Length: 239
Image 1: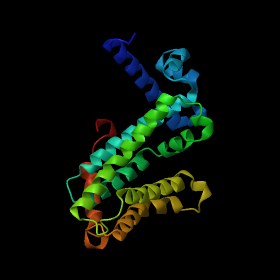
Image 2: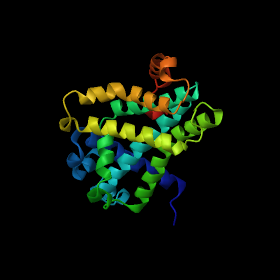
Image 3: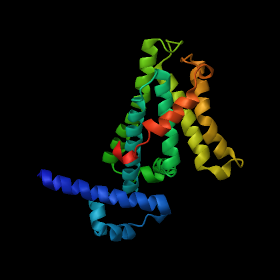
C-alpha cells in the first residue's frame, strides 16, 4: 500500500534530516569519519531507521552527492538566467562553478569517491539512476546557452556541435577541480594558480570558437564582478 500524503511527508522530512547530518559529518570528518552510530545519535533515531532509508553507508554517501549535484544544477539554472549576452550568460555558469568550488571544497572529493567501483557497487540502483538524472540537469543550462548562441549567430563556427563546446568546458573545469582536490600531488602554488586562471582559460577557449564578444573586446572582469556581487548574492538554499 502506498503511504498517505502525510506519511510521505514524514518520510521525506526524516530522510532530509539524515542527509543534513550526514553531510555535516562528511564535511568535517570525511568518509571514514562517517560513523552511523554517531549519526543515529545526532538525529535521535536508531541506526535501523537510517537503514530504512539507505541500504548501505555507501548509499547514504550517494544520497549526499545527489543533493550536492542538485544544488549545482539549481545554481547553474540561476546563472543561465543572468540578464545579458549569450557569452556573458555562459561566463555566469563558469562563475557559478567557481563559487561552488569555493563554498563546497569537499564536494568534488565526495563525487570522486562515490564513482569508485568499491563504493558504487554498494549503492542502490534507484539512487544510481537518480544521480544520472541529476548530472544531466547540470549540463542542460550551459547546453541551452550554447544552442541559443549558435542559432543567434553569436558563434562564428556555426557548424560546431554544441556538445563539443560543452565537453571542452566540462573537462577544463574537472581538470581544475582535480588539481585543487589533490594539492599534494602538484607543485606548490598550483591550486591558487588554477583558481585564478580557470575563468580566463574558459574565455580563451570560447574565443577559439569565435563566440562574441571576444575576451579582449569586452570587459568581462567587471561583468563577472557584478555577477558575484548581485546575481549570486543569494544563499544556495534559497535557489
